Each structure stands twice: as C-alpha cells, then as structure tokens.
Length: 303
Image (tube, rainbow, N blue to C red):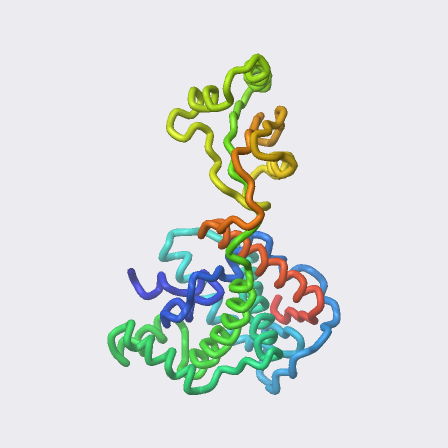
C-alpha cells in the first residue's frame, strides 16, 4: 500500500500509522456525528485560548487550528481521494476536515480536563515508531513532504491525536461486554399476501422452523443474538423485545417488507459479539460528541 493511502480518512490516521491504536471506533466513523453547520452554545468549561496571532481556521472553546494546518489537511484529503479515485464536493471536503478537527479537539480537551497529558517523550516514541514502520529517517522525511507535514506540524498533530485517542478509548472501553440480548429467527416476505399466508399456516399448527427452513435452507431464518439498536429495522426490534422465548410476533411491516419473528432465547447479560460491541461503542462516541458540541463554542473562520 502506498503511504498516501494511509492518511487522513479517519480522525486518528496518525495513530494508525504509529501502530498505537486499538479497535476502538474513530469519531468520523459514526454516521450520527453532528455537522459543523449547527450553532454552538456556550461551553460548560472552556479550554484555554490558543495564544497565537497566526491566521486560524477554527476555534473550539478558544483552542484553535491554524489555517496552515487546515489547508494541509485539506490537501491530504484531496490527495487521498484522487489516489482512491473517489469524488467529494469542495463543500463536503471542507465539512469533513472541519468536523474531524472539531471532534479531535473536543476529545483532546476532555482528556486534558481529566488530567491526561502527553509528554514530548510520548510524541517522540510515536515518531520513532513511524520511522520503524517506514524504514528510515529519510523515508519519514519523504513521507512528511508527500503528505504536507513539517516537523513541527507533525509533532503537534501527533500530540493532539494521541491525547484525543485517550479520551476516545476511555469512552469506548467503558461500554460493557455484555448486554440484554435476544436470539431469534424470522420469516421475511416482500409481499404482504405471502406473509398473511405464512401466518395462517402457523395458526394451523405448522412449525415455525419448518417454514423458516423452506424459506432459508442455510440458516433457517436465524438472526443470531442481538442487543437493542442492532437490527436495521427499528419497527422489528421494538416488537421483538416485547416477546419472551417461544413467542412469535404477528406480521411486522418495515421499509424492507413483512416480518414474522420467533424468539428462541433471551438473556439479560449475554456476551456481545465483536460487531455488536463495536456498534454500541460507535453509538456511545457519537452521543458524547453531539453533547460536547452542544455545550461548546465553535467558531468556523474559513469560508
């Protein structure tokens, strides 16, 4: 993979390069992450103002991103999009970069408020790891030039990213490894008439598993274990979590079609799958960021 592919498309790209992230979700992965177009409100605890007379692109609770940092990050995004042959409007590029910076600053500020600090030695350790990953100091210098970093801006970006990652990990690691879950199977029909016909068959005594196996010979309609928020159709989830093991729903209409669901098992503390816990972690992070934005002063200084 070319070095340019490894940049910018996630909030903690520098941590990925340095090999120091875990599997926690990045802030930008959340589809519910709020847009920078919202009006900010006064913060509960403002950060110290950024002491500089240099042109700024963004201020979050008085702490800023230099215009040069913003322009470099925008260039990295544009280079990555070109490399990946993807398109994004100039306005969407602007929003992506600003959103990432806002999320990163909010997380970093919360980490500092909690007493977490990143020393110059910590930053140097990340840079040493970058050198090891890339192969040499010369390779790092080449990478910096290609990706619009000076020595100073790389250190600043790493320090901010590592600080933000601590807060991100603190939030996501607090998500329990167990949750109330249901194990269920379903019959699914695009056509309501077919769903009605299946329901009548069930009422005559035909086993749910028999119909499910006919419709889905591989899995028998098995949905596996899932917590609240995991199903893509909230209408189905709302009904399913009212059922007890052995109970079968009526016909549930959704945007996909018509469902009949049979609950097999229910457990108030069932271990979460990796996918389910990651989903809950992303949701937790998105909610935290939304609330942080609502209690922060955010000033966008670039058109």
